[in-house]
Amino acid sequence: MPVRDPEMGAQGQVELVVREEDLASALSPITGDAYPGVLATTRCIAMCELAAGRVLAPLLAPGELSVGVTVDVKHTAATPPGARVSATARYTGRDGKLYAFEVSVKDPAGEVMTGIHKRAVIQLDRLLSSADKRR
Image (tube, rainbow, N blue to C red; front, side):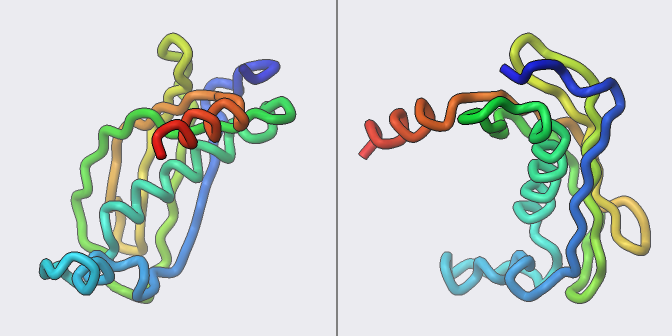
């Protein structure tokens, strides 16, 4: 566990300009399914996770990292390629061992995604050992 909790309301942010590989349609050749050429929900979620991780990162001890555990979001608007998007995670406190964040993603026209994300702090060596056992 981190030496201390983040300050209530502490925020992390991630920005990017939407590229072809950020679009839902980037999955179409992989899956054979047809997806639209707009910012993928999965990319928005990844941005929210990265923003929340940035809040916790300065508080972690050597060998620790934070990992996403739950995501409860609503993706409410489509964002085209070339648009600049920004994800923000605001620390709202603990839920047991989990660190909770309000997350949002915005593009120039307004809100794209909103919701809650929770993270756990873990030991990297334990995570890798556990993953290795699943081979």
